[in-house]
Image (tube, rainbow, N blue to C red; front, side, top):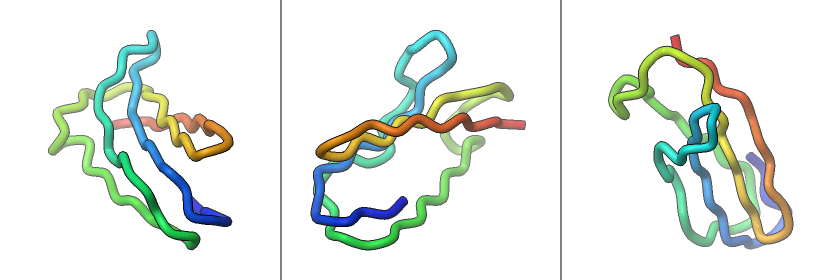
Length: 68
């Protein structure tokens, strides 16, 4: 993800019925481009479709994640 200015960030994973599975990031980040590697097997996620929610100071973005 890309931040255009310093922001409070929350990155969370949800199942398809809206249960929060895990918070991956929670805190302030400086302006810049960030990559985040996530190993679903280490987090105990089974195969399926999940929703990744990225919240910044002004907006929330939702992405679909498929675990095989």
